[in-house]
Image 1: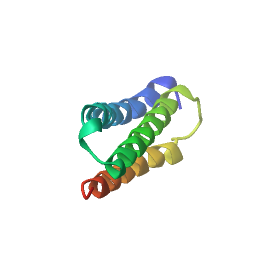
Image 2: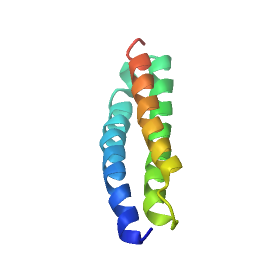
Image 3: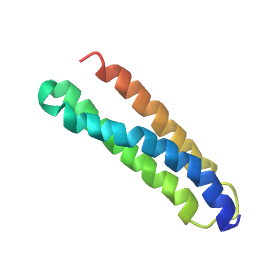
Length: 93
């Protein structure tokens, strides 16, 4: 797989990761003092998962390989689903 195709795969995943990570980070900082401990812990976990997801999305474009990196694409999708579930759980605090 050439570099252009890798970045074509990574581009939307990076954009989606940033679309989730930037508001999550901003919201964690903005509402830190207004929420309880459970909310804070889940917010930090969400930010860490999104940061790891962003790193995996970048690795799709950076790391050369012969085949489509299905495992890394799956990890990005799993990160999205995990953060959505954690955000739902955080809403109960």
